[in-house]
Image 1 (cartoon, protein in one colour):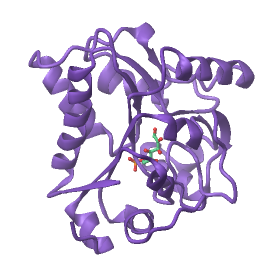
Image 2 (image 1 turned 180 degrees about the horizontal axis):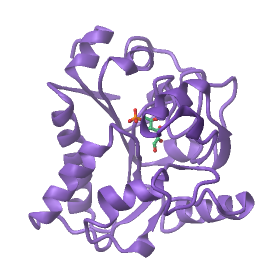
Image 3 (image 1 turned 180 degrees about the vertical axis):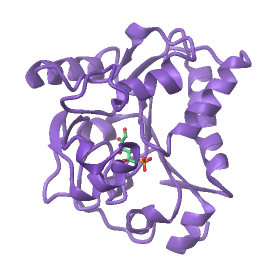
Length: 245
Ligand code: F6R
């Protein structure tokens, strides 16, 4: 695992965005795995700026998103489909048919098949962007005795519902279930870039960086099994976990 410490959130986002931009420049028909959440917002801002300055072309790029809330219409403002449209899809020249965010409204068996079809279509993901939950989840693979390798529907943990309630008017509005790539799907990506900033992620990042163990109870630790994973954290978080590069 390669670890990069940046001086702040903006630089962390710029570093992750550069890795994605380089991936697309080197392979214009790249398949990207995308994440939502607060941390990733700044990454998409940088990508959109580079696109607006004519420095990258997404016309042949394909994208697959990690997850979506169950029971939520794609055009609902709280959906990850809406997040992606607002932050990236409507702002660059990605073809709508080349993007995929699971529908949380469709029949689960049907949507799982569609999700798998998109994951398998045209080969594995070239670069997967990841955030990490306060409890160490990746995608919505929550800490558990056992993790699921493939696409599945998962009940969100109390910790995740609480963390995500900042995007909702009230905690009661946070959906309790999500459809997500499994850890096997994530680990199949050729390259993984994980971003994390701020002290809230301290526990998960301490387990990731400060020991040599892997646990399903800290799903992000599975990145230690990947041959090409880069972890980008800001100084505030690095200092909090005592990581020295
Ligand atoms: C989002 C996702 C989640 C988030 C994680 C961190 O698609 O898969 O794993 O990356 O919950 O979210 P933020 O960045 O809001 O702290």
